[in-house]
Image (cartoon, rainbow, N blue to C red; front, side, top):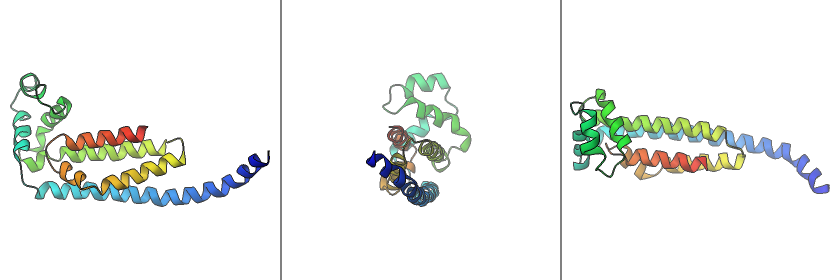
Length: 168
């Protein structure tokens, strides 16, 4: 009974301090996420092409019929066919690699939005804080800019794994 009374009295003060600290963490995570998306857009324009990106551009060119692309190129490859299908469907962005790379900005934006919703709906404050720290740490990783700036599925996979970790 004494322990229960102590927890009841301490909860409001701890909850208020936690909420204030979490507010700063949320703002930092949001600003960091948006800054990372802006940096990705900048890196996409500066990065030179490499062989694998030419392959992705070739097997997702709009002139290639969907069925032919799926059976002859996407399924035999080690990258997810869903990524290729989305790259093929985004052919309207242009045929230049720089324009086609913007597909990853979409993945990043979706991951940022979905992660925000998942963290808002998290059951415990500790899980929210851990998720926010994870988002900030991931934004600072060099792999995010390297993989996010190329026309390959690595960044989409990184976004998917991040959301999986947040879901746990």
